[in-house]
Image (cartoon, rainbow, N blue to C red; front, side):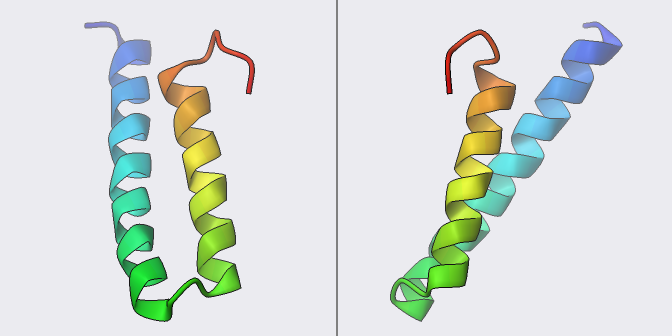
Length: 56
């Protein structure tokens, strides 16, 4: 595995972990705007890392 692929995998895993944490926060906060915005940003970042060749 190349260093670039390893870095992408690490980024993907870090983003996924943060998404899961924010989903729990969103559920606990009942849709708090800041948490929802953070979750949206994390999901978009994950999409860029996971599928860089797709339009976002």
